[in-house]
Image 1 (cartoon, rainbow, N blue to C red):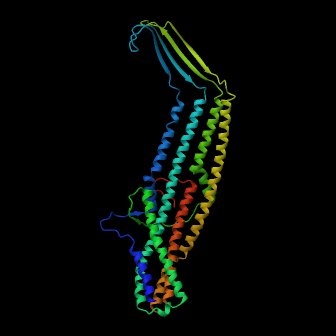
Image 2: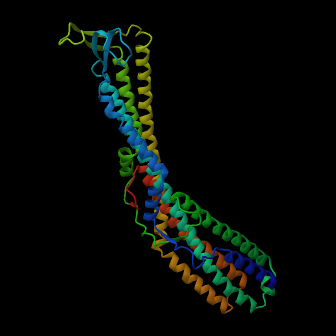
Length: 428
């Protein structure tokens, strides 16, 4: 049975040895913190740049809407001429300037619609930034947890070397000839599989960071010192008020509601006529004044208003009602998301606080050292010692998981509240 034990040990060491080893000439690793993750993600994201440019484009459509149409200026010469560019043979000359005027209020209403659409583009830009921040924070905490597990695996290598030496000095035949011993071997195999999965997960997490930061594949990351875990001080009611006042989702729905209101007003104004004003004058070439001049005013009559303008107004009214319902729904959804995220963050904090208040990490290490001493003194059988060691690993990773889960829960709460801090700013 000693061979079985040694096989398990060798398998574990092989897995640990398969972890990447950085050469001396490799680039220096990037020490990653939460704040740096946010800054890199925002600074490198093409989605943020695209959203900001769309916002600029939308805002630049507002001012032209306030301006009148460009006037039409026409000069006409009649008579026998050699070419369109040679008018010396013309017998008469006519000048005309024409301008189209919309009924007062139409241009302002359309400009209001474009202004609301620009606000919507701004809210969507904030929403893109909010999503990028969420991805950056979650990716950081995934990397945090997996890095901690990887550190435990490296420590496991030394521990297993010690166990290997201890196993070789004892006759384990009697200790392993039992059902409990077989179960212990099964537990070791399962633990080994979990370690393999954890090592692969760290590689996946680093690849996700490469993608999020637009960094070269294979960039090396080292976990920096995380910020202390601060308690959740905001109440659920305060979080809801923040979401209702700051959520880009609500801001976009509100802007669309304002745009629909302006469209409704514009559709009603389409029942009113537009005007065309023309000033003209006619003179003989070479003369000092106009022989004939005057002004004309044209009116566009909405002759088919029962079928065109009225239907358009009803359509705009229905669109406004739909956007109002969308706005109400976005508020309800924001409230629901905040309530859910706040409860999750509060629960995660209570769990982490209970771990920290009891100093479970410190107690766990002391308990493990006591188990090692008991095994060396032959006060604990090998099967119990291995089972204890696996429990030690699982408990330690669970403590790290609680820290990462709290960080991710805070990130989701910040997202639900609609907070979009500047690059590098953190609200943990």
